[in-house]
Length: 146
View 1: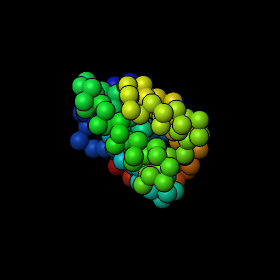
View 2: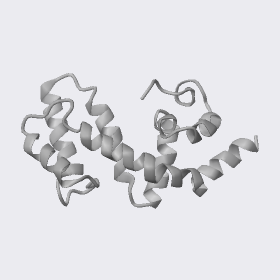
View 3: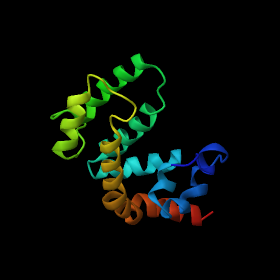
View 4: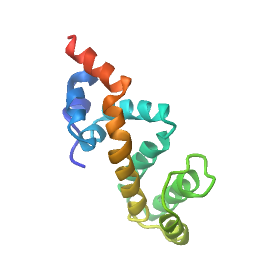
C-alpha cells in the first residue's frame, strides 16, 4: 500500500480517480472514496466484514502503545476472528487457532496472515465482480458524462 491517492487528498470530487480503481485492488483500497464504493458493493454480497477487517488491521498496525494494542487486538479478535463473532471473517482454522493462541500477548504482526488471506480473497474474488458491478459501472458512467 502506497500513499493516499489524489482523490482523497486533493480533489473535491470523489469521481476524479474512479477510472484508476480499475487498474488494481491496491489503487481502489488506497483511496477513501474507492473504499466506500467497494464497501457498498461488498454489502450487496454480504461480505462487508472483509474490507472492515482489512481497514481495522491497517489502523492496528499504526498503534504505538502496548496498552492500546492489547485493547484493540482483543476487540478485533472478538469482532472478526472468534468463531460465531458478529463479523466473522472467512479464514482457515490454522490461522484462526494461531491468533486465538497468541491473543493474550498480541503484537503488531498478530493479524498479518489473516489480513493477507482477506486481501487475497478480496483481490481474487470480490474485486473482479466489483469492476463488473452496477455500483462501479454507474460511477464510471457518471464520470464520463461530465
